[in-house]
Length: 316
Image: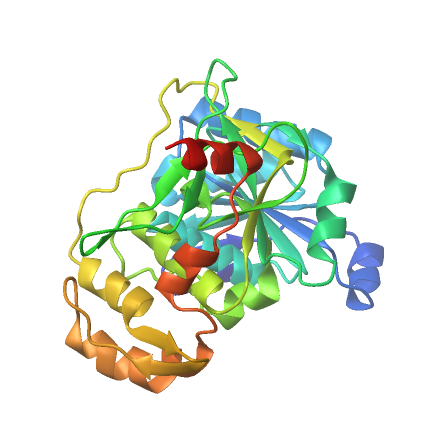
Protein backbone atom coordinates (compact mmCIF):
# COMPACT_ATOMS: atom_id res chain seq x y z
CA UNK A 1 0.00 0.00 0.00
CA UNK A 2 1.17 3.55 -0.80
CA UNK A 3 -0.46 6.64 0.66
CA UNK A 4 -0.73 9.99 -1.13
CA UNK A 5 -2.30 13.25 0.05
CA UNK A 6 -5.92 12.32 -0.60
CA UNK A 7 -5.83 8.70 -1.76
CA UNK A 8 -4.22 5.36 -0.98
CA UNK A 9 -2.98 2.83 -3.53
CA UNK A 10 -3.38 -0.87 -2.87
CA UNK A 11 -1.25 -2.60 -5.47
CA UNK A 12 -2.13 -5.90 -7.12
CA UNK A 13 -0.25 -9.02 -6.11
CA UNK A 14 2.55 -10.05 -8.45
CA UNK A 15 4.94 -12.96 -8.29
CA UNK A 16 8.66 -12.23 -8.25
CA UNK A 17 9.17 -13.50 -11.78
CA UNK A 18 6.63 -11.07 -13.18
CA UNK A 19 8.10 -8.14 -11.27
CA UNK A 20 11.57 -8.88 -12.69
CA UNK A 21 10.14 -9.28 -16.17
CA UNK A 22 8.41 -5.92 -15.98
CA UNK A 23 11.68 -4.20 -15.10
CA UNK A 24 12.84 -4.95 -18.65
CA UNK A 25 9.76 -4.02 -20.61
CA UNK A 26 6.90 -1.56 -20.62
CA UNK A 27 3.37 -2.89 -20.61
CA UNK A 28 1.28 -1.55 -23.45
CA UNK A 29 -2.02 -0.85 -21.74
CA UNK A 30 -3.52 -0.21 -18.33
CA UNK A 31 -7.28 -0.10 -17.82
CA UNK A 32 -8.81 2.34 -15.37
CA UNK A 33 -12.33 1.65 -14.08
CA UNK A 34 -13.98 4.70 -12.50
CA UNK A 35 -16.60 3.78 -9.89
CA UNK A 36 -19.68 5.85 -10.76
CA UNK A 37 -22.58 3.39 -10.44
CA UNK A 38 -23.96 0.91 -7.93
CA UNK A 39 -21.92 -1.59 -5.93
CA UNK A 40 -23.35 -4.40 -8.06
CA UNK A 41 -22.27 -2.63 -11.25
CA UNK A 42 -18.78 -2.12 -9.86
CA UNK A 43 -18.37 -5.77 -8.86
CA UNK A 44 -19.76 -7.02 -12.19
CA UNK A 45 -17.49 -4.66 -14.13
CA UNK A 46 -14.34 -5.67 -12.25
CA UNK A 47 -15.17 -9.35 -12.69
CA UNK A 48 -15.75 -8.94 -16.43
CA UNK A 49 -12.40 -7.19 -16.97
CA UNK A 50 -10.54 -9.73 -14.84
CA UNK A 51 -11.98 -12.53 -16.98
CA UNK A 52 -11.81 -10.87 -20.41
CA UNK A 53 -9.01 -8.29 -20.53
CA UNK A 54 -5.42 -9.43 -20.03
CA UNK A 55 -4.13 -6.01 -18.98
CA UNK A 56 -3.26 -4.44 -15.63
CA UNK A 57 -6.44 -3.17 -14.00
CA UNK A 58 -6.86 -0.10 -11.82
CA UNK A 59 -10.10 0.71 -9.99
CA UNK A 60 -10.71 4.19 -8.60
CA UNK A 61 -13.24 4.30 -5.79
CA UNK A 62 -14.18 6.23 -2.66
CA UNK A 63 -13.43 5.14 0.90
CA UNK A 64 -17.16 5.02 1.63
CA UNK A 65 -17.73 2.32 -1.03
CA UNK A 66 -16.80 -0.46 1.41
CA UNK A 67 -14.04 -2.43 3.13
CA UNK A 68 -11.03 -2.33 0.81
CA UNK A 69 -9.73 -5.58 2.32
CA UNK A 70 -12.79 -7.38 0.97
CA UNK A 71 -12.10 -6.04 -2.53
CA UNK A 72 -8.40 -6.93 -2.29
CA UNK A 73 -9.19 -10.48 -1.25
CA UNK A 74 -11.83 -10.91 -3.98
CA UNK A 75 -9.70 -9.33 -6.74
CA UNK A 76 -5.99 -9.84 -5.91
CA UNK A 77 -4.87 -9.00 -9.47
CA UNK A 78 -6.41 -5.52 -9.37
CA UNK A 79 -4.80 -2.29 -8.13
CA UNK A 80 -7.23 -0.19 -6.10
CA UNK A 81 -6.93 3.60 -5.80
CA UNK A 82 -9.08 4.69 -2.86
CA UNK A 83 -9.90 8.35 -2.28
CA UNK A 84 -10.66 9.56 1.23
CA UNK A 85 -13.02 12.28 -0.01
CA UNK A 86 -15.18 13.02 -3.03
CA UNK A 87 -13.12 13.62 -6.15
CA UNK A 88 -13.92 14.52 -9.74
CA UNK A 89 -13.83 12.17 -12.73
CA UNK A 90 -10.94 14.15 -14.19
CA UNK A 91 -8.90 13.81 -11.00
CA UNK A 92 -9.41 10.03 -11.09
CA UNK A 93 -8.16 9.88 -14.68
CA UNK A 94 -5.11 12.03 -13.86
CA UNK A 95 -4.26 9.68 -11.00
CA UNK A 96 -4.46 6.61 -13.23
CA UNK A 97 -2.16 8.32 -15.74
CA UNK A 98 0.31 9.05 -12.93
CA UNK A 99 0.25 5.53 -11.52
CA UNK A 100 -0.11 3.11 -14.44
CA UNK A 101 3.38 3.35 -16.08
CA UNK A 102 2.15 2.03 -19.44
CA UNK A 103 2.32 3.41 -22.99
CA UNK A 104 -1.46 3.77 -23.17
CA UNK A 105 -4.30 3.70 -20.71
CA UNK A 106 -8.01 3.11 -21.20
CA UNK A 107 -10.69 4.80 -19.13
CA UNK A 108 -14.10 3.19 -18.63
CA UNK A 109 -16.92 3.67 -16.15
CA UNK A 110 -18.40 1.04 -13.86
CA UNK A 111 -21.86 1.72 -15.33
CA UNK A 112 -20.90 0.85 -18.94
CA UNK A 113 -20.29 -2.41 -20.77
CA UNK A 114 -17.97 -3.00 -23.72
CA UNK A 115 -19.82 -4.17 -26.82
CA UNK A 116 -16.89 -4.12 -29.24
CA UNK A 117 -13.15 -3.78 -28.78
CA UNK A 118 -10.93 -4.51 -31.80
CA UNK A 119 -7.70 -4.29 -29.81
CA UNK A 120 -5.16 -5.05 -32.54
CA UNK A 121 -6.75 -2.53 -34.90
CA UNK A 122 -6.96 0.18 -32.22
CA UNK A 123 -3.36 -0.24 -31.10
CA UNK A 124 -2.20 -0.21 -34.72
CA UNK A 125 -3.83 3.22 -35.10
CA UNK A 126 -2.40 4.55 -31.85
CA UNK A 127 1.10 3.40 -32.80
CA UNK A 128 0.94 4.74 -36.36
CA UNK A 129 2.29 7.94 -37.86
CA UNK A 130 0.32 11.09 -36.99
CA UNK A 131 -1.79 8.98 -34.66
CA UNK A 132 -4.56 10.53 -32.56
CA UNK A 133 -3.63 11.10 -28.92
CA UNK A 134 -6.86 9.38 -27.92
CA UNK A 135 -9.42 7.02 -29.43
CA UNK A 136 -12.90 7.28 -27.97
CA UNK A 137 -15.75 4.80 -28.31
CA UNK A 138 -19.08 5.01 -30.08
CA UNK A 139 -21.71 4.94 -27.34
CA UNK A 140 -25.04 3.13 -27.08
CA UNK A 141 -27.93 3.39 -24.63
CA UNK A 142 -29.77 0.57 -22.84
CA UNK A 143 -31.57 -0.37 -26.08
CA UNK A 144 -28.22 -0.67 -27.88
CA UNK A 145 -29.12 2.43 -29.91
CA UNK A 146 -26.08 4.47 -30.92
CA UNK A 147 -26.29 8.02 -29.59
CA UNK A 148 -24.77 11.26 -31.03
CA UNK A 149 -21.60 11.22 -28.93
CA UNK A 150 -19.23 12.90 -31.40
CA UNK A 151 -18.72 16.65 -31.18
CA UNK A 152 -17.35 19.43 -33.38
CA UNK A 153 -16.20 22.96 -32.40
CA UNK A 154 -18.86 25.66 -32.57
CA UNK A 155 -19.35 29.19 -31.27
CA UNK A 156 -22.85 30.43 -30.45
CA UNK A 157 -22.43 34.12 -29.83
CA UNK A 158 -19.77 34.24 -27.09
CA UNK A 159 -20.34 30.65 -25.91
CA UNK A 160 -18.46 27.55 -27.06
CA UNK A 161 -21.30 25.09 -27.58
CA UNK A 162 -20.15 22.07 -29.65
CA UNK A 163 -22.45 20.40 -32.15
CA UNK A 164 -23.21 16.74 -31.46
CA UNK A 165 -23.58 14.10 -34.17
CA UNK A 166 -23.51 10.34 -34.73
CA UNK A 167 -20.31 8.33 -35.23
CA UNK A 168 -19.82 6.50 -38.51
CA UNK A 169 -21.12 2.95 -38.02
CA UNK A 170 -20.69 1.92 -41.67
CA UNK A 171 -16.93 1.38 -41.24
CA UNK A 172 -14.26 1.43 -38.55
CA UNK A 173 -12.51 4.44 -40.05
CA UNK A 174 -11.41 7.00 -37.48
CA UNK A 175 -13.01 10.47 -37.52
CA UNK A 176 -12.28 13.60 -35.51
CA UNK A 177 -14.18 14.42 -32.38
CA UNK A 178 -13.56 17.44 -30.17
CA UNK A 179 -13.30 15.76 -26.76
CA UNK A 180 -13.78 12.40 -25.01
CA UNK A 181 -17.52 12.00 -24.41
CA UNK A 182 -17.99 11.36 -20.67
CA UNK A 183 -14.23 11.01 -20.35
CA UNK A 184 -13.94 7.50 -21.80
CA UNK A 185 -11.34 6.32 -24.29
CA UNK A 186 -7.86 5.03 -25.03
CA UNK A 187 -5.20 7.64 -24.27
CA UNK A 188 -1.54 8.18 -25.15
CA UNK A 189 -0.14 8.47 -21.64
CA UNK A 190 2.96 10.53 -22.49
CA UNK A 191 1.02 13.22 -24.34
CA UNK A 192 -1.78 13.22 -21.76
CA UNK A 193 0.72 14.09 -19.06
CA UNK A 194 2.65 16.52 -21.27
CA UNK A 195 -0.44 18.72 -21.56
CA UNK A 196 -1.20 18.25 -17.83
CA UNK A 197 -4.28 16.07 -18.27
CA UNK A 198 -7.60 17.32 -16.95
CA UNK A 199 -7.87 20.58 -15.02
CA UNK A 200 -9.34 19.49 -11.68
CA UNK A 201 -10.03 23.10 -10.69
CA UNK A 202 -12.83 23.10 -13.27
CA UNK A 203 -15.91 22.02 -11.32
CA UNK A 204 -17.73 20.25 -14.12
CA UNK A 205 -16.97 16.95 -15.82
CA UNK A 206 -18.21 18.20 -19.17
CA UNK A 207 -16.04 21.32 -19.07
CA UNK A 208 -13.03 19.30 -17.88
CA UNK A 209 -13.42 17.11 -20.97
CA UNK A 210 -14.11 20.06 -23.28
CA UNK A 211 -11.11 22.03 -22.01
CA UNK A 212 -8.85 18.99 -22.48
CA UNK A 213 -10.16 18.29 -25.99
CA UNK A 214 -9.73 21.85 -27.18
CA UNK A 215 -6.14 21.88 -25.88
CA UNK A 216 -5.36 18.67 -27.78
CA UNK A 217 -6.81 19.97 -31.03
CA UNK A 218 -5.30 23.44 -30.78
CA UNK A 219 -1.90 21.92 -29.99
CA UNK A 220 -2.03 20.08 -33.32
CA UNK A 221 -3.20 16.68 -32.11
CA UNK A 222 -6.50 14.93 -32.75
CA UNK A 223 -8.97 12.83 -30.82
CA UNK A 224 -10.56 10.10 -32.91
CA UNK A 225 -13.77 8.11 -32.70
CA UNK A 226 -14.22 4.68 -34.30
CA UNK A 227 -16.91 2.01 -34.25
CA UNK A 228 -14.14 -0.54 -33.64
CA UNK A 229 -14.63 0.53 -30.01
CA UNK A 230 -18.22 0.59 -28.67
CA UNK A 231 -19.57 0.80 -25.13
CA UNK A 232 -23.15 0.84 -23.86
CA UNK A 233 -24.97 2.12 -20.79
CA UNK A 234 -27.14 -0.93 -19.89
CA UNK A 235 -29.22 1.00 -17.33
CA UNK A 236 -29.67 4.31 -19.14
CA UNK A 237 -31.97 5.04 -22.04
CA UNK A 238 -31.06 8.73 -22.06
CA UNK A 239 -27.33 9.49 -22.07
CA UNK A 240 -26.77 13.25 -21.98
CA UNK A 241 -24.10 15.65 -20.72
CA UNK A 242 -24.63 18.38 -18.16
CA UNK A 243 -23.57 21.53 -20.00
CA UNK A 244 -24.83 23.90 -17.30
CA UNK A 245 -22.77 27.12 -16.91
CA UNK A 246 -20.06 26.97 -14.24
CA UNK A 247 -17.85 29.39 -12.32
CA UNK A 248 -14.81 28.54 -14.46
CA UNK A 249 -16.55 29.27 -17.77
CA UNK A 250 -14.35 32.35 -18.35
CA UNK A 251 -11.18 30.32 -17.72
CA UNK A 252 -12.16 27.61 -20.22
CA UNK A 253 -13.04 30.14 -22.90
CA UNK A 254 -9.90 32.25 -22.37
CA UNK A 255 -7.70 29.21 -22.91
CA UNK A 256 -9.65 28.24 -26.01
CA UNK A 257 -10.05 31.66 -27.60
CA UNK A 258 -7.14 33.68 -26.18
CA UNK A 259 -4.76 32.87 -29.05
CA UNK A 260 -5.39 34.05 -32.60
CA UNK A 261 -3.38 32.78 -35.56
CA UNK A 262 -2.73 35.26 -38.39
CA UNK A 263 -0.55 34.29 -41.38
CA UNK A 264 0.99 31.45 -39.41
CA UNK A 265 1.86 33.58 -36.37
CA UNK A 266 0.19 33.49 -32.96
CA UNK A 267 -1.02 36.59 -31.15
CA UNK A 268 -2.58 37.01 -27.71
CA UNK A 269 -6.19 37.91 -28.42
CA UNK A 270 -8.48 39.79 -26.02
CA UNK A 271 -11.96 38.78 -27.13
CA UNK A 272 -15.46 39.75 -26.13
CA UNK A 273 -17.46 37.42 -23.92
CA UNK A 274 -16.32 34.93 -21.30
CA UNK A 275 -12.88 36.39 -20.57
CA UNK A 276 -10.59 35.86 -17.56
CA UNK A 277 -7.77 38.38 -17.18
CA UNK A 278 -5.59 36.23 -14.89
CA UNK A 279 -5.76 33.20 -17.18
CA UNK A 280 -4.98 35.43 -20.15
CA UNK A 281 -1.89 37.01 -18.55
CA UNK A 282 -0.52 33.95 -16.76
CA UNK A 283 -1.40 31.06 -19.08
CA UNK A 284 -2.12 32.41 -22.55
CA UNK A 285 0.68 34.99 -22.83
CA UNK A 286 3.34 32.94 -21.04
CA UNK A 287 2.66 29.38 -22.21
CA UNK A 288 -0.26 28.68 -24.54
CA UNK A 289 0.72 31.21 -27.19
CA UNK A 290 3.79 29.14 -28.18
CA UNK A 291 1.96 25.78 -28.04
CA UNK A 292 -1.08 26.53 -30.20
CA UNK A 293 -0.80 25.23 -33.77
CA UNK A 294 -4.37 26.04 -34.81
CA UNK A 295 -6.69 28.57 -33.19
CA UNK A 296 -10.35 27.86 -32.44
CA UNK A 297 -11.77 29.56 -35.54
CA UNK A 298 -9.35 27.57 -37.71
CA UNK A 299 -10.53 24.38 -36.01
CA UNK A 300 -14.09 25.20 -37.00
CA UNK A 301 -13.14 25.87 -40.62
CA UNK A 302 -10.97 22.78 -41.05
CA UNK A 303 -13.06 20.23 -39.14
CA UNK A 304 -13.46 16.82 -40.83
CA UNK A 305 -16.91 15.30 -40.34
CA UNK A 306 -18.19 11.79 -40.97
CA UNK A 307 -19.73 11.24 -44.45
CA UNK A 308 -23.27 11.20 -43.04
CA UNK A 309 -22.71 14.44 -41.14
CA UNK A 310 -21.16 16.12 -44.18
CA UNK A 311 -24.26 15.19 -46.18
CA UNK A 312 -26.54 16.43 -43.40
CA UNK A 313 -24.71 19.75 -43.23
CA UNK A 314 -24.81 20.25 -47.02
CA UNK A 315 -28.56 19.63 -47.04
CA UNK A 316 -29.09 22.19 -44.29
